[in-house]
Image 1 (tube, rainbow, N blue to C red):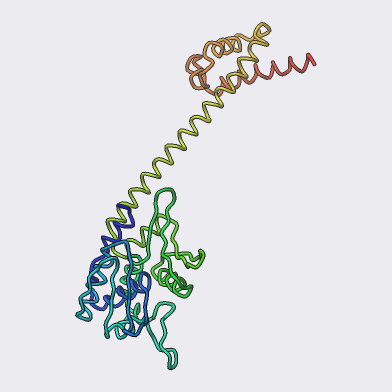
Image 2 (image 1 turned 60 degrees about the vertical axis):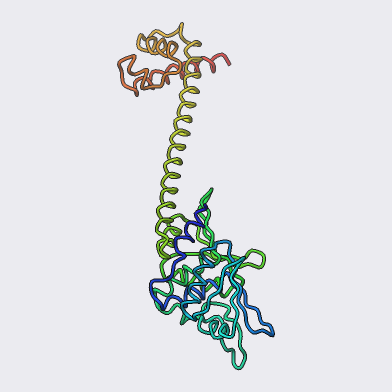
Length: 295
């Protein structure tokens, strides 16, 4: 089961306050529903791959209007009450004398903080998805720019920064950072999803740190080998001409321990690391001078 499914199953419960029923159902229909007009009247069809989403929508409709509908390849809602329901949910409204659908969020639906949270919960149930495979990415897809802009503003009211973009005919609201996604999950009550996301982020952080350390150690090892090769070559050029006992001692230690770093050589010679570096540099400089002299 994906993190998306786990989060949806966790939050697909009736809101704690009855006033939030309207907000949650409005969000689910606005994000996963379609409205049809026919000679039989107005109908609503809610489509979702997550069965828990359909179930909670059916429960809310029953709680508010006493009408039972069953989930089978989606939730089909029909009857004379549907028009009234859509007005109650802030989805249908009057534009002058004409009735039309709200392109964005109707303000009265999210007027209370608890209702605003329930609305966001309903939006994630209806059209939310989250991916943590490579990068952290949560998105919700809408059919209108007004809806996407209103959702961004609603999230901003809870100090969650979301971004908005378009892809073909879809308007996407997305969150990119693990911390912000975690804050969003906490806001909508997906606490187990928060724990799983934080565990994933912590494990990824440890792995990244380990990889950086390994890469750093490999880079340092490469530098040691490169420096050692240059020093051995210099020693072979000037060994017979060295007359300083300390340089001779250091040169022999390097030849006998070509893979050893400065600290290891310092222990062998019983001197400081800086002393070893100084002596070997002096030998390399002597070799460079000899090469220039030949030219």
